[in-house]
Image 1 (cartoon, rainbow, N blue to C red):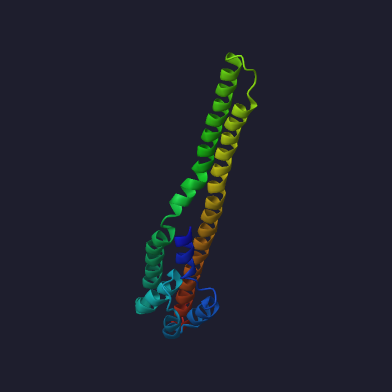
Image 2: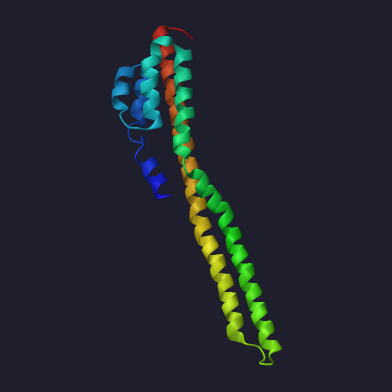
Length: 180
């Protein structure tokens, strides 16, 4: 989670995005490319589109889509681990719960069989193991699911902004060339 948080955090474009979009819409790609200095998907889209702008709208669209497809894989790196942990940790906790309850019943049966009556301490031990297993499963799953959802939402935002910049550059081309 920490690695992904650092990755996404180091590629934030929130503060310069409005200005970048404005420059792209106006067709000032030189200034936009100068402003796009981070290692973010959005910045790479601007730099790449500025480099192929002479090829027209199809070249810009192809460059934008190519970058989004390639960079998406980088942004999604290790997210599957969070998704898997979030989905499977409760089952591991449930398995531990079942084992703890089984232990409680085995201990209860052994105590009754030996004629000692109900040994509450042994039953409590099994039940406490069951509760600990449940808690650990939830302790792992809840943060993993939250982080997974946050990173997925951030990735959608990055892709949306990258597409918006590509569309702005294409619109700026149409305006500059006087075509509809």
